[in-house]
Length: 92
Image (cartoon, rainbow, N blue to C red; front, top):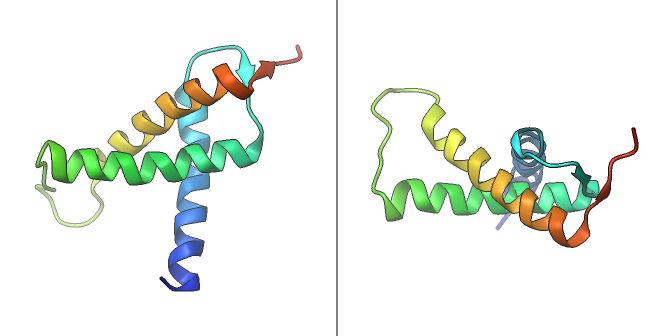
């Protein structure tokens, strides 16, 4: 595993994690490090579910929007779980 792979996983995980946090319902907030971990988990688990479990394949060339929708949905579920453990009420 190269440094580039790790950086891509962290940057992609941060983006997917923030999108998952944005989609997830609730009034609890989690730290940024937990958001990134949820995003990395969402990327890995969402991709695994999309390809290996449900055997979906991209029907178009280029950007696979459905794969990323699965990743964001899984990240949102992970964010909800992390918020129940680590979350604190958002200040208004």
